[in-house]
Length: 150
Image (cartoon, rainbow, N blue to C red; front, top):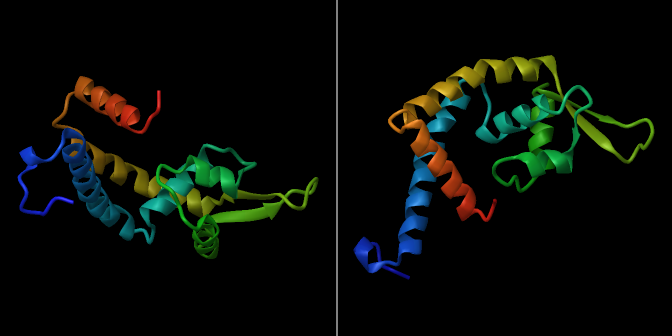
């Protein structure tokens, strides 16, 4: 592995790109966490609220929530347990199949989401407004391509 002193031109293009992605991720997520702290949320909890908002009143199963999150959640059950204790969501078993547990957004969860959403949107604008719409579209396409998505 390259030493920290190794010049970037000595690294391959893939490695330089990887390091830039890691630096960018760190820069964005470190600063975005401040947006959520004021409301007692983590970024991961915000994304759970957002996923549940889009699921409708019937909610989603835990595995489906985990699948829709933008970053992996190693222990979705524990994450949801914390949110349940904070009354941001509810968890109910289906009457037709007691093995299936559905998770839904509460009014309190919706209020937290609505309070944080404009702050998070403003954070995105501040971080990315120096880029044109075409540049943002290109960046999105390239990031999806890097993830192996169409």
